[in-house]
Image (cartoon, rainbow, N blue to C red; front, side, top):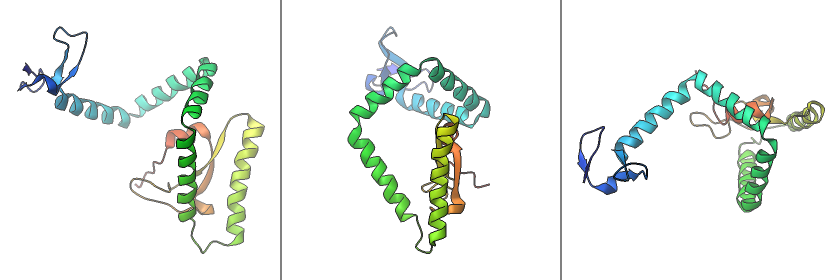
Length: 170
């Protein structure tokens, strides 16, 4: 039995995370209090534009300073997770196919191909990766878009990755 320093409840040892550096080997907060704190702290940080900007700077600096490590991790991950990555790519292609409406014309398909060609061309010319992004994500939390020409934009890969499948509905 141990008392949580946050909620002051006496709980069994199983309700505390292990912490080898603590005298009793247990974290000072119970699992419930710790989860609540982490969840609140994460959301507070995630909402802070300063925190996100600093994180982007820190990660980009690390990638620039350690390109061999980053490449090695990527290669190791791809080698270990080939089937998983293939399944994910197929699932994305299928979801994109399902989100392509039947009323699109040949001109619409041509415009979409041009967007993908433009991304490849910019990657070759500028020396860094470009992606075709859906302005309204195909599977967003609040809204879902279609795979149509006016929902596509060509962005640098770093911007697209930081955007994820987020869309501001306001």
